[in-house]
Structure formats: C-alpha cells, structure tokens
Image 1 (spheres, helix red, strand yellow):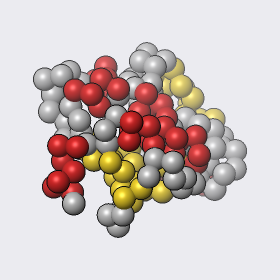
Image 2 (cartoon, helix red, strand yellow):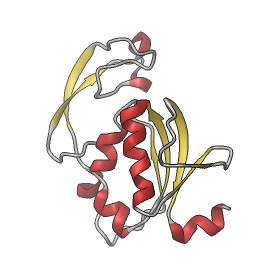
Image 3 (cartoon, one colour):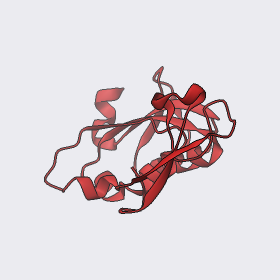
Image 4 (cartoon, one colour):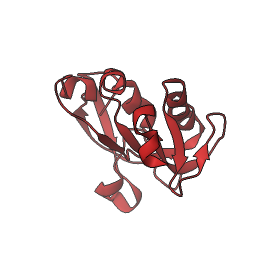
Amino acid sequence: RSGVDGTRVMLYAGCNRSNAEWNITGVKADGGPAEAVLTVQATALDACFTDDDRIDLVKIDVEGAENQVLAGMQRILKAQRPALFIECHGPDNWRACAKLAGQGYTLYDTHGHRLEAQDHYPAAHLVAVPPARAQVAA
C-alpha cells in the first residue's frame, strides 16, 4: 500500500526473485539493487477502510516501504488507534516509525523493552502501542 492513493508503483523482485520479498523500493533485503518486475496500482490504507471499520492491529512488513504505508494510514492512526507490528528497515523508515511517538504511541522491541523515539535501529521489528492499550501491553 502507498501513501498516495491511486498511484501506479513498480514492483521489484526480492533475493532470488522471491515473491515473498517483492517491494516498491528497488532494493533487495541484502541491500543490492532489485530487478523491476511489473507495475501495479497502489492504494492507501485510509482509502480501503472507513471510520466504521474496526481495526485493532496492523502488521507492516513491506520491505523498506514503511514510510509510505504510515503516510497512507494517518486517518486510521487517529481514528482507530490500532496497535502496530512493524518490520522497520533503515534510518529513513525508522524516523517515520519514531514519529508514532509524537502521535501518542509507545514503541517497544519484540522483547517488550521500550524504545525511545530518538533511538535508531537499522533493521528492527517493533511494536507501537497507543495509550489506551499500553496498560494491556505492560
């Protein structure tokens, strides 16, 4: 999904052309350049769901496109306040994930250790919990 609804994006192959690692960034998980495979229509998550839809948890594993996904779900983050499980790649995407702290989310690693927004993790799985659910997570 993309931050810009209706945009066409190029899909790139993952390592060994694995479709499990296809991405829109043009970079494979090992950091090397990825081969362009096809163009597809992208849709922001905000365009897929209404405020009447109940969204409790969102898993984001998008091989380096975390920034775009978070940009395309700002209404959901404000209205629904779902918990998020994010595989975060690289400093630019970490900054996008860290901005969740400014929206009232508390960030944790997968071992339950709280992460500070200014911390930097080049590739990490993290859990972002909104205030209403922080008591449950603790």
